[in-house]
Length: 508
Image (cartoon, rainbow, N blue to C red; front, side):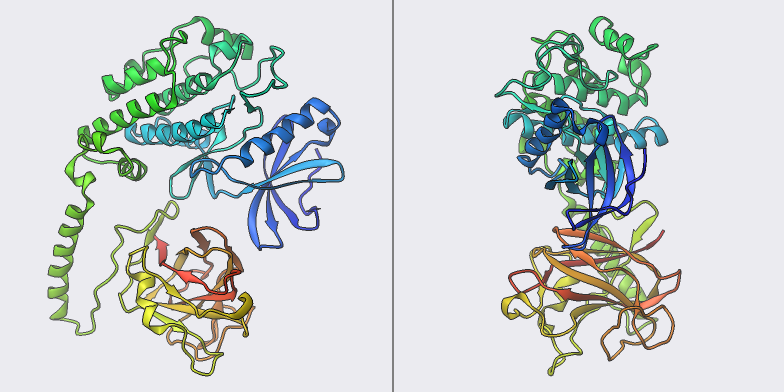
């Protein structure tokens, strides 16, 4: 198939790279030139664009997913048509599919597998309550972002329960490795069918393999109909009896015995995760994040160290105080740092940089008073999301200068690889610059390179801060810099940018 990389859709979306393809569509990474942000675009294949049934399925996906706004569902941004070819625009997720993760690493840590299952089940429950069944739940359709969080995508054969769907004629759709028995037989497909598929996904996360294999898809589908699931504990002895029972109930072929509701499955998965956290000394990052969202009844089963991070924080504070006392004897200029324990996960191989509490400074060289809310700058590194540094409020949301910003002093210096910006006021654009030894007195100019002190070096492209937390890769060419500048070049409509936290990351 001829590549469409470089094509411009609706005079707005430039296709930059192909990142996936399927039977009816191809997915591209693209640049939204209006908002200057990366997106993912699913473009219908030309050879099936004239098929009314296929076209309606594609349009139905856009309508279905556009109704769903959930932390664990990939968001639909836009939809359109170019030269007779419909497309859907999604948020772009930096990361990999759950299937890719399993292929690379094999069976996942038990607690992490359960945590992903909970996130997927919560997303499915959200869809089911809106009468939308996914019908193709599989690890290929679960994206794992850079923080390790799971997001369901590809509602390509989803349909609402309120109307007759195009697949109501008995055709079996979906991937047979995960297909529910009733779906394989062409019977009515409900939310219980999605829960069966999720149970198979959980089985694969725990064992590294799908339960059934055969010469072809029909043979595999018939095994889902007729054969019992292999014993998950026999394949993975570390799995608790509680968790094994959840897998068995989710994947039973007997519909009256299978989980009837998402809430029942989620409650049992949460119970299993609490038990797993009590059994193991080490709990994965994603499992820790999910543990903190468990209801109070289940929280009581979670070890104290995970229920009350303040106990851990107290120990870290005491250790930091002791270390500071020792260091003060040898360095009068030592500053208390932000620490790294609460930094969001960035990407494999990257570790957070601890910043001094006085490391931030407003940067406004293009105004008469040279200041921009200087009394709030410490809020950008205080690790308190509720506090923010903000720019002044500009009339009609338009800057009257090339830019304004916030600097971070990473003393003594570091070759930062990534910066994470948390902002409660999305809709603005920033570029990241760096300086080596001293804070440049003049504003940055596009195109500068990491040479020529005291000039600013441009180490990122323009990035749209279009959600609460944005991760920006930095290109320092392996060189250390002391100062990093978040240079704001476009404001949101309300005319004011707010930054709650800034994190820097280096190579681990």
